[in-house]
Image 1 (cartoon, rainbow, N blue to C red):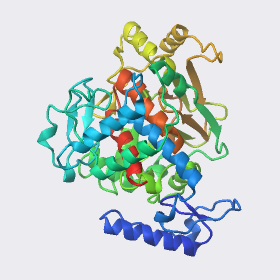
Image 2 (cartoon, helix red, strand yellow):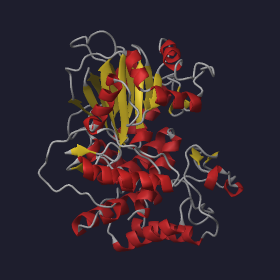
Image 3 (spheres, rainbow, N blue to C red):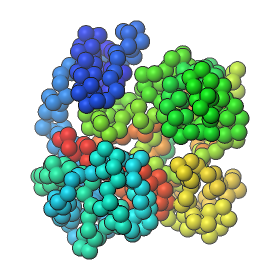
Image 4 (cartoon, rainbow, N blue to C red):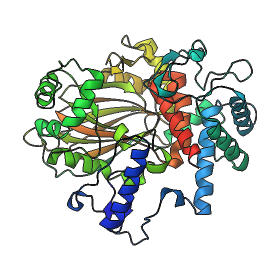
Length: 483
């Protein structure tokens, strides 16, 4: 079997894959998006034959099995309620969500596009940044002094701003009217327990891979580096941003800083870069891409290449979705038995206690784990030392039901993949020079957990990763639109 390098579907032969790729390319061209070119057959990933029928059909023919659609609709309905209604709502949460949707439907102005890079303003309630802009990137004056995140809006007294089309709202109303929700936490403590049920884990992917050359990795992602340099500046001169200069310039930066840039699945040009992409694609078959999130978010926009020398750090933060992180040593050879990175995780069920303790006990955390970033970059100001971690762990204690500590330490070795569940606060310190491929991993059955993460962790406690709010709700609305 062959795997489509764009949406990762399996196909029986190259001809059926070619027809599928032609359809994708035509759709992209019609919408003015990047057109995909199918690689040579020898460059396409080969999948093991699982002995079942492989679909070669238009997108419109999918999701026709009633059982699958019904359960899928329940998952979306649950996530939609968690997006619109605060946990602990005294009434029927589904009816409360329907009430909000009907209010949104009555707003008489053009719908607004979701854009995390557009106009930025603060929520009038909690103060968290809310990123939004009107169609074609033009700022909408109606949003000034009228910005509210979903968790702070008051349906009775606050004028709501509609950020989705009427058609999407109508579909959402029908979905909630016809579908029962699967699970609605009754309190924030129940949300924490729910999120804490999925623990961080580590898996052996390929410990026999040789260590990689940093220069070869950077060279393989030259086009992605140029895109990153153009958008972020990165302190590089115009000359240093050129394709023939950027690799050397970035290598100089790595001696004193940490590098993170987005990579596409179809631009890797060296063996090392292709190997990293190959490892990333091994879990892609179970992820939620393609028709549900197309046009808003996809693998090309959520896959990061992270390169850091020993001692580089990532400050404490939490992600709205599940995430994966695969690490490979940089250098001449792999140091057997020596970990590449140390991860510290804090269970979501005690995230509020952890935040309050950090604010009270740690000088570097005057606002807890809030304000972990500045201008979109980690400041490292809130990074916890090993002594701080031990103090925090002693304070939080252990789960009485499982006996597991609420603060967990995970050591990541060469060729290992770390699974980071949504809502778990975590920090990372590189113990050796290494390169990592990391990505958000969305699955339909976890969409409710992603919305709950926004409520319980990001909006209520940490108040960071502000653009993730628009991403999370945007993915959900796109999925509803495509029902």
